[in-house]
Amino acid sequence: MIREMHMRVKPQNNYARIAFFVFFFLTFAVFGVSYALESYRGLLQLGAMCCLVTAILLYTKFIAPIYQYDILLDVNDVPVFTVCQTTGRRMTTLCRVELADIRTADILTREQRKAQKADPSVRHYVYTPSLFPATVCVVRVEGRHERAQLLLEGTQEFASFLLEQAELARQICHTTEETDE
Image (cartoon, rainbow, N blue to C red; front, side, top):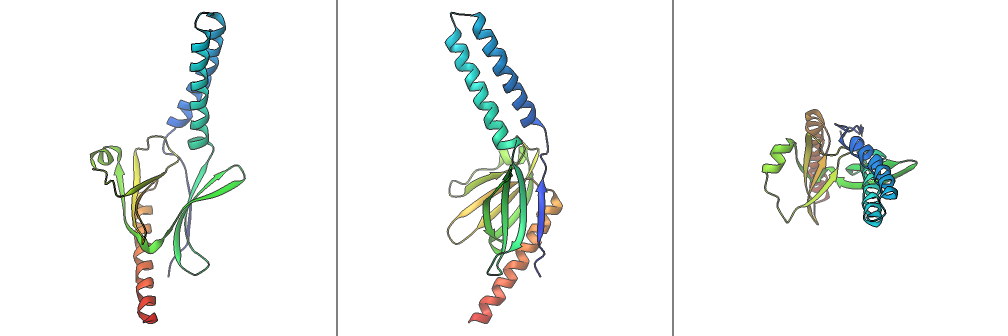
């Protein structure tokens, strides 16, 4: 029996918050300096706008959203793994994968990920609420139409539970295919 799971993910570090505040305050500092220096005013204001855009991007990508990983049954009783993002009152499903299509779930450090060769035929999706997380859960998915690699934040227990449920889903799919024949 597939066990449903709902997990809200908290960031591993505060790098995004620190970078946001640095760029936000740097925006005001550079705007203030631009009024004192007439000869470089346009260039400084352009730099301040770049700092402001960077701060806004950091906020919308890493600080405002809340990520949630779910294992649940869809309307056809097919077990699926979903990644949802909640920003304010709006909830968006970013990823929906059949649980039986998950092949591996490994916990890797930043150094181990850098040492890996990237396969160009595999699509990479990053669903982490942290900027530069120390460890990530790399989930490899092989569906009918594409091969993908999902980068999630999770513990070893999360990875083993996900693999256990994926194996159970493959067994269920295999038995339903045999009964259909």
